[in-house]
Length: 219
Image 1: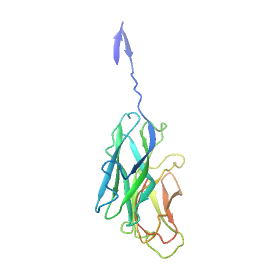
Image 2: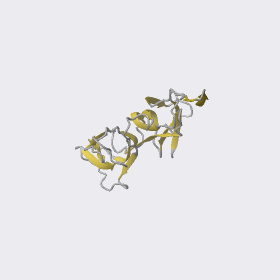
Image 3: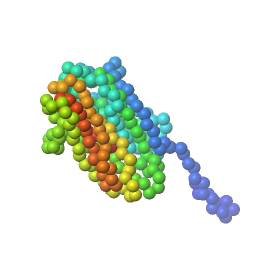
Image 4: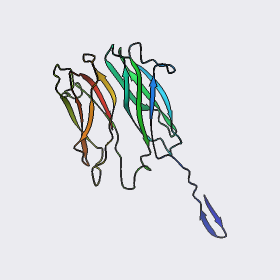
């Protein structure tokens, strides 16, 4: 507010508190209103509105990843999570499955942050997601095999812009899994390696006769 009193100009700034960073988990399961992921076929999705404890000055960036999965064993394991309809007060958590898969329950972890206020001056942030499959990456090596030895697949991810100073910290999680029922269990580990100011390697490791058709990592 600009005001003038007695020939003196006065500037009054009114500051409103807004969120900078917040995190949480959401547990969703069969029995919740309109849950449709445990039966049927074809593409199905279920949404839950997540409200922040306050409001951000503008819609924040939202990171979402799987932290628990309880899936029916009668078909291939297929599930995806993402954040949609992001506003300054919340977002929609979208859980989806497809074909004849059935999901009993799921827990997703999320982080919402203001890209400008959550960082120290002069620092930056990079975020995104990458999908991996045999069709998109010919060297994708996590398909079905009778071998029980450890298998791994590594892909290099480059940042949109180089970080200045030291290499950044990386947070990564799985947001989509397409796992073949040809095997009896889900066994997957994600690692970040060789982190530099220009990018990093993401590595997926699994053991046993495990088959993955499609994976998506969110960083």
